[in-house]
Length: 184
Image (cartoon, rainbow, N blue to C red; front, side, top):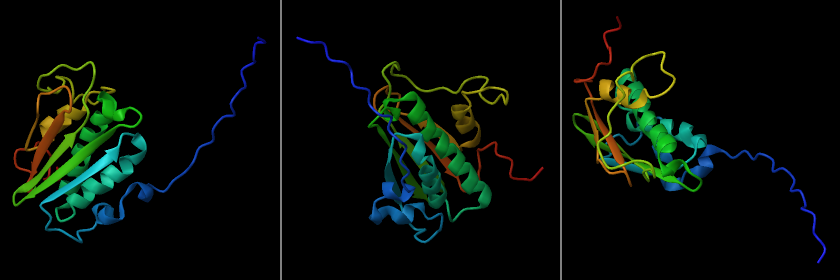
């Protein structure tokens, strides 16, 4: 039988899609960055496990906190983005076909965010801990959980390596947070 030469495949080009194509029409109000439906109790959205949708993640988080002060919105979006980024970098959710879920519970006193991911193969059961040098500005990575620990009112996780849930609560008045709201 004669040997067949491998036929080279042509390189695939890049395709550009509007981020809105990732959003179901019934959930479009989750991403407006406006307080058009401020009295929600729960918002949940499943995000594709790719960095390309991080602008949608930030829009979702900013919309959830739309009725709060600018500092609160910024901080809630920052901390929520860190949890989403950790799901992408440190779990199977960031692999092709992966997803993670953000759930926001609205309370009279603040917002509670939970990020549920698929967990990781190398992780073991146990509670997450921020790195001791996590707030070092010279560190190239490892600051995410340290920021959540410093700026969230409360935070924690379910302690499971598979299907990990990491959450934080941010009080409306930023009580319990090391966030500087005095403008000093």
